[in-house]
Length: 292
Image (tube, rainbow, N blue to C red):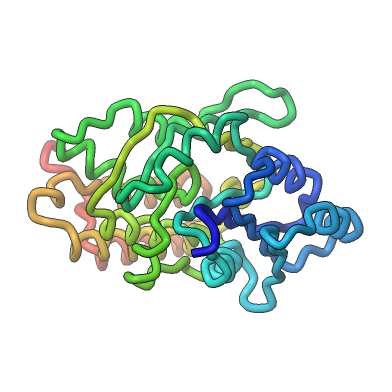
């Protein structure tokens, strides 16, 4: 490997934020930065200025000519990565000032995945938000002797950011992202969790997530909902097949009911509700808990 670390960044129409992100990475000769543009159609000149300002060989700018979406971009990045380790970042987020000191201590370790505690802010007000809370909770409550705690951090850390992943493990197990517009990362994360036999949890923060109104995660259209639902149910089936009997005791079966509630609350209509109900039953989610 030519680098200790490759950072993979999908980009679309946000060159100002992208520059902030790359600037936050800093000047580290052993870090490769790969930006994959998802066929941006705005601020092209500004994006080209960003490209020209990072012209060293370790900065790689590529273009997604395939199926549109961050999943395709990340797969392109995986193919171009020359680092022993992988980090994923979104173009509107950024790294902390001391991120490199935090991650470089693990470059020579034999871990498969190292999890770090994320943080989040509103980029407009600069105030803290809730977007990181689930994953921060996984880190804060992690206990390697508690199987429930291990299951949560390995299999329910559904986002690719704020965790450093061994590139050899990803390649050997042929792990890639789903090439869909929404939730492209949850199957990737599940497979990383299943194939990570040796994990480490670091309670330091290396990554700041921005919580913006226009992000894909805020899209609640019916199309987006069913794409996310299909990916979630694929992940659930995969985990049921891969996890041990003891681990499966901590699988979350509430997602089926939660999906039906989302259909109801967003007023997608009775047809959509029955479509979702069929998917819930087909995938083996109980409609009621034992207590109910």
